[in-house]
Image (cartoon, rainbow, N blue to C red):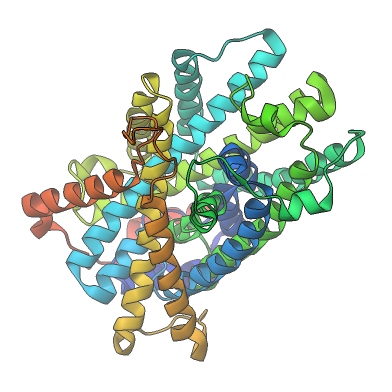
Length: 508
């Protein structure tokens, strides 16, 4: 057989390393370093996170907290990402966080990390796609007079979920292509939005307003408290970069490409998000009107006030397409997590979720399970607008602590950790310590009340913070299932799959 039909050398080395870690290669390695970074960049998606949470930021600190909070949080997330990237380099598997925790701390650490990570990813699909449905409803309202009722928004949301499932059935090569396009769409989209909001409006806010204006619409009297919970605008956006680790079994030279993908995606997002937030904030025409917009989407009102309905529709389409890219990448990452967690016996029905398509080696059943659970998570939004906040809580409160666990275990059991080719050297422990401390702080912030109850102090469904309930529910579910079937959870050592190697050689 000619050399043109042989898999690249990196594929053989990657697959051998995967076997050494105890897994049989089942997924095709068709993703390069740029594609791997693009997955995490697409999931972070500044055009999704910043725009979805912008209305929240207008009340919790206003422009000053949004801008400076972005810089502070972005810097701290670089520490978290770098520390996580180092552990990813040593354990480049689709299981990612839970596999790292299992190897460093044991079965129970891996089990709870996996459940937190999985629920965070499922909540991520729900919150991203539901936010996309809300923006789509706002666009349809401008274009056709559409009234985005909760029921209609839910139908749009379900349609988006089906779209993402179908796109993910065609294999990792299409996922890689879409994510590569996504990177340029996000960068170009930020440039187009900022340029339009800079050139077109006759009035702009002053630099003093953008960088120093503090707004407290929470009802809390403590400015420091408002600043603290205002940081969540940025922290919500900076999540999902573990996608690079989850796609590592489909990435060539994964021990280097996956950790670099994590760090690069965070750095790119820091820069792009700061430009976007500054540009949008300069263009605010009516602060109160933006907060109370009839569109239900404050950035849409900024676009309308600054550019008129025609320009607003164009910019809304830019954001909606970016959100579609984001949800598609999150679906890919979540399905690989379902596949990997099932492979180790942690999910009921694992025989279904570990099946891969013969032609594309895609875990199709895992894809459908991911979008189905995401649909169920968002169903309460039919009855309460606050339910969307609960879905977001499931995302951030699940996935954020899961980032810190492998880093903490790497510090705690440093003697048993063998660094991979991408490592932090002597800076590993200091950077990891900062990362764990930051995650502990923001986890507490996610659980704090975000709106003060009205006079009388009675907490209602609209003022209650569902994040602690989401965290408790995730841990309780994990504990119950551990007692039922945790003994069957293991990382099996398997032999090389000669048949798959033969198929790879024929296709590549």
